[in-house]
Image (cartoon, rainbow, N blue to C red):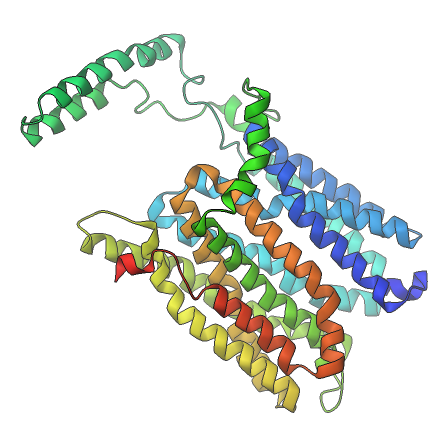
Amino acid sequence: MSLNMFELIKSNSSMQTGACILALGYANFIIIPCVNIFGRRSTALVCMLICIGANIWQAVSTSYHSLLGARVLIGIGAASSESIMPVVISDMTFLHERGTWMGAYFWAYFFGGWVGPIVSGSIAAHVSWRWFFWLSTILNVVSFVGMFFALPETKYSKISGLPADARNETIGSVTPTSTTQEKTNSEPKQASENDMERQLDTADLNPLLGRGYPSPRQRWQLWSKPESMTLKQLCRYVITPLHLALFPITLFASLGVMSGSACLLVLNLTESEGFSRAPYNFSTASVGFTNFALMGGGVVGLAAAGPLSDWVSMVLTKRNNGVREPEMRLLTFIPFVAIAVVGMTVAAVGLERLWPWEVIVIVGFGLTGVIVMAIPTIATTYAIDSYKNVAGEIMVLATVAKNTFGYGMTYFIVPWVTEHGFLYPIITVGMIAVLSLKHQPGLGMIA
């Protein structure tokens, strides 16, 4: 579409997508510190305003470089969708239901990737490519209104929200608690029943219990007053995602998100060339309709991955005498890894050998839609269960890995398919996804 208008060679068109993908990932190095300092609500609203302005800019752009700048800006604004909501989910949900809600988030996130090609192809063919950005602007405005009235702040100080007398009680209650602990340490032979009674007495004296609900001002304020911090603490918010890359669990979660997204992207990059040729001869709109299979598989993944991992974790917790371990979720990877192998193999071999499109779309694309939902859901929930306090930083690392690899794919997948066919590119990406999940940290703990 834009290539005809700006008379660009085909290779330059990849920069439009690549610039947006890179901005989507690396902008979170700034967004997550803002989330931790200024709050979830205010940061999300500002990012949505950026999206509105960027979509208007894209719709009225008159040159290649103008459109490229707008693509970078939309990536910066939309980056919040890849990091803020997992933080909100970790703030608001209990451990036993976190997998279900993370699955719902990933389904809503990937829903845009599935519907986008369907809608954009039809709009470009029947109206104008500019109207796709005008439609995005309208949807962003609706989203902003919905977030303004329905997205409360989930980061707030529990102490500052209490009356002065309660705060004094809380501060004063530290000394008795410490004394009780010292007494307990000095009397190791005391019965466990007395220890439990002492804990219950301490809980009864805690003024925070029953008074932890945030005030309306805390929930709906547009701007959260930043807490006082040193420059060292501020730098820590930026450096933490890089530090987390050294942790096996967070690195594994990042590879899981990257793998699911890579499987989706390789099919999106190859479907047009695969189905527009003989014997399929699909129109632009018909090629976009193949994404309905990915959506259908995503619904199955939503219904299975999150609730299944929560259920398996609860069963294993009961077997473990009530002690819950984050690694208990990893057992649910096994069926989805098998589905990944089957789905990607059918898509690759089917496109290469011109199988009936029904088999490629329903089986190959459908099963791939399942793993696109399931693998990132389980991987990120596992990492957040392990390190809940850095949920946002975990998503920064995951989105950087996902978008950096995706940026590279926009340059080498299509030329690879043109030169060597569909089999090797799709199978290679599928094998990367499977091998990245082969060595799951801590899986032996639940054997």
